[in-house]
Image 1: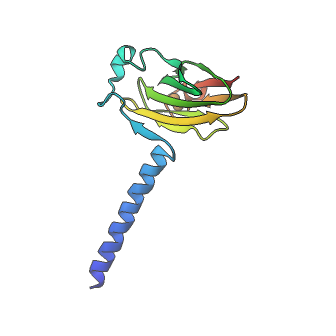
Image 2: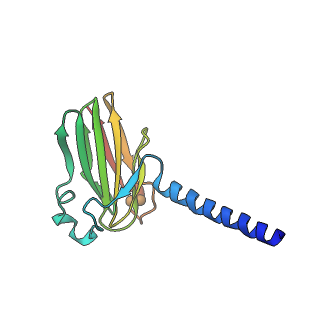
Image 3: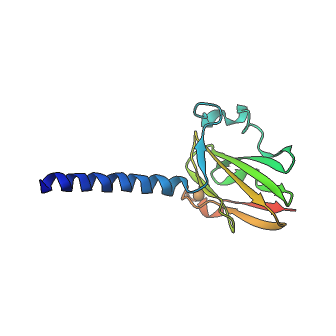
Length: 152
Ligand code: CUA
C-alpha cells in the first residue's frame, strides 16, 4: 500500500538526517577516539599519559604529535611550533565544556568534547603562521579563545 511506502520513505529520511548530523559534527578526516580505551576523566587530565604534559612530541622522522587541552578560554599549549615538511597528528580534548580547535587556513576544524579525544593528521609543507580559534560557543570568553601555530 502507499502507506507502507511513505513509512519507508520517512525512515530513509530520518536515517539520512542522522547521518548528516553525525558527519557535520565530526567532519571529514577527523576521528573521535578514546586512546586509552575508555573515556577520559576531564577532572583527571593532569594525570593522563598524553594530556598531563601537553605540547609537541617528535615521534620519529617527519612525524610529530601534539597534545592539546582546551578549556575556558584558552588552549594548552597556547603556542605550537612544528618544522616545515612535518606530518603532525593533533590529539585534542577538553577539560570543561565543548570547544572547537580550528586552525585558520587549514582543514583542521574539529569539535572538542570533554571525555573524548579528537584526532587529526595534517602535513605542513611550507613555513607559516596560523591562528587557532574556537568556533564553538563556550561562554563569555569564547571570542578571546585563541592560539597560534607556527611552521618554521
Ligand atoms: Cu571555547 Cu568557544
